[in-house]
Image 1 (tube, helix red, strand yellow):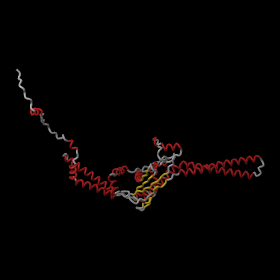
Image 2 (spheres, helix red, strand yellow):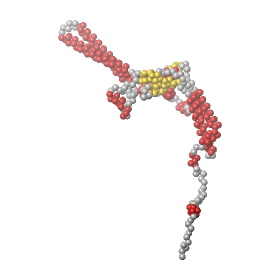
Image 3 (spheres, helix red, strand yellow):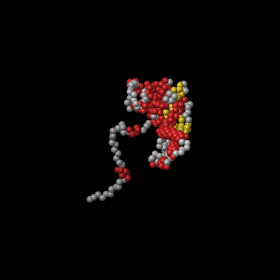
Image 4 (cartoon, rainbow, N blue to C red):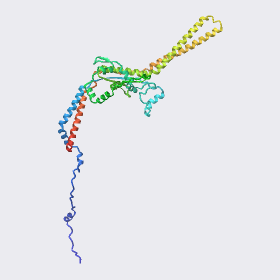
Length: 396
């Protein structure tokens, strides 16, 4: 018979005890690199401590760099920079197609939107820097005599650097350190003095020695001609060891550039002018001969009684008139050629004349010292931190 004894319901306390989850602890092995992600953060306190610990090393290295900067600032050669600003004349295209190309060519990528677009047969101003850096221009510029006021001499640049200029202490050190391999290599190779046969084309080539090429490279580094394409202004700068010499060389540079540009622009017109002058002289001589022949015939035939004499007179008169018309036409062409020659001569408007600099352009001693100080601090702090890191990793 089944037990019908009523059972007691579970009490709330018993139900709570049964619902408590069982917690089990599993032992694991500790790995030393489990928390490496936290080490990526920079500990500023530790960083400051490492810098403070290496303060004497930082001070020594920074002091060495500052001393080097002071040495360079005090013993570097003093240089002066002369500047001039010009506005070269640019002949614009005058035909309608050229004007349309100039106005709208830039929008279509045709290169016609520039204000410096020059007419055919002229030199665009953006070519001027290339002209100045050419060998022929540099060699002709070196032949100009200039006044070195601080040295008390008037001479050319090659003679100045060879006989009057003494390199500074920093230049000697640079030559004995960085430039020593090149100097030794030059001694080993030596100068080649070979006797060569006469070359019929020698006048058509530019032949320079290695020493001249080195001097040209030195001058190129001291001369700059820059064109501002927006304003069309041409700026020429010359840097030398003497203020007066820098100004004079800048003046010679501008004058020589004008000669080169003028010679190129008037070359064709000059040839046309010379041809017209020759034809004009020949036409004038021919006209004068016809005049004399006509006058002689009239003197010899005063009465002109025969028809043959009248015909001869008319023939001489026609030849004289033809010679006069040709002579008159060539005279007009000659005047037109002279006008074209004058029109083709370029004009350089001076915006700022060549100046004699009163202050040196280099060395900038304050900037040199500040840069050496900053470099010294960066290198010394970096070396101190690297040394501290290597000590922590037990690498040293």
